[in-house]
Image (cartoon, rainbow, N blue to C red):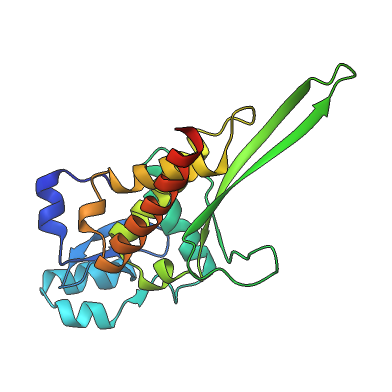
Amino acid sequence: VILSEVEQRNYVGAAFYYSPDGELLGHLGNSYEIRVVDSGIFYSLQDNNDDACLFGNSTSLYYSGSGTQVNIINYMASELGLNNIYVGALYDGSGNVLYTSGGRTTHSVTQYTYPDGSVYYDHHYSYITINNVSDVFKGGNFYDMMCALIHEQDHYDNYNPYTHNEIASEFFAFGSTIYNEYFEYASPEFRESIYSQYRYYESLYYNLYY
């Protein structure tokens, strides 16, 4: 859900509780982790103001079923105008699991080369996958996850097969990750990782274009 600055400050230190169907039920407790709980249990324990018992009766996003993970991630993504987000493990080109990558945007493009040498790209579609074996997903931090979605949204929205450059794409995507209303509330580890990658691509970008 998109929060005002005041609402964000009120939510810091609270756990975000979602139903298995992906509905945001509310927040309680002293964590900003994404938790999954039956709606009946949530409302019963919320009325009793029993934060510790509610937390104990809930499950982390990481250990929830795949269907629940998809429902919650898509509910969060819908507030950014995104839909049909895939959730699953990501691998590198050698088949190794990517623990450090929160997500990936895949572009399906067909290239045609005409006899005169000119090139035409038929951009079929793009899709986003959130990596459910990543450190970000395992941490389950609401703000980290929103920033990961915003990062992929930048890749999704701004892809152009004629002008695409990986360095520029990552530089601007990390910029969008930093300059949004969620980033200042993300975990210290997440922020430091994003800053480090932003500086890396910033250096490559300016060496490439200036």
